[in-house]
Image 1 (cartoon, helix red, strand yellow):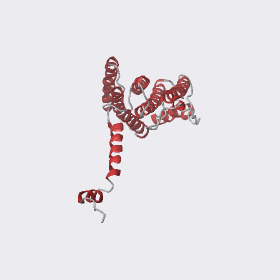
Image 2 (spheres, rainbow, N blue to C red):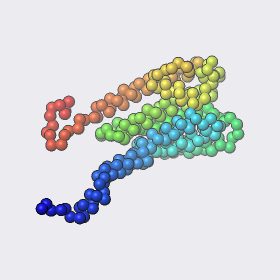
Image 3 (cartoon, one colour):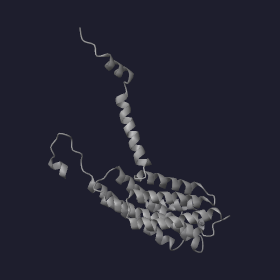
Image 4 (cartoon, one colour):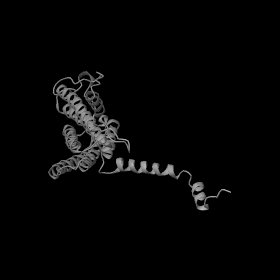
Length: 256
């Protein structure tokens, strides 16, 4: 007669039949939590950028810019932490963040329309101009391409779009006449829409800057967007290496 396996083995198989399935799921969950929840990861930076975009595009109250500034402060701080920025740059950025926090707090106590709307928009744009350069420097120095490299490249690309959106907002607040001509002054939601359609060279044509410097800014954003894509994609493609099958010696095709 065939021997029956030990009762402990039977119990482990019967009581925990899907243990080998649950363990990979837990590992994937832990990996996602580390990528999108850790201050050392660009995943959290990407989440904060999306939150900033959602708040900017949907909230129309006068205190919305203050809320956006507070979210930006957290975004820039997380970016500097994840990109391992130099100490001197962190000190300069910290001074800008403190000034931004003061502007945001002051805006909360100013009734009606913000008297310094252009200044607030300029501050927002400057905050988002600091981060992409720091991220790109960190990505260039990384020895390999991984999920952090991809998330960092996406975050830097989105930050460019956000920075130009606030630049359009600042120009519209400071120049004479509506920024979009017959389409009106334009709110932050329209500026974001125009910025990202310009960055990606989609160009629907429903919103067009009426004059300079808005037109020159739009051309600059188009060039930056295309150059960034070319350089970022080139970096990723150049760093990718084919995965070698375990136990198979390398061939000439692997080095090509």
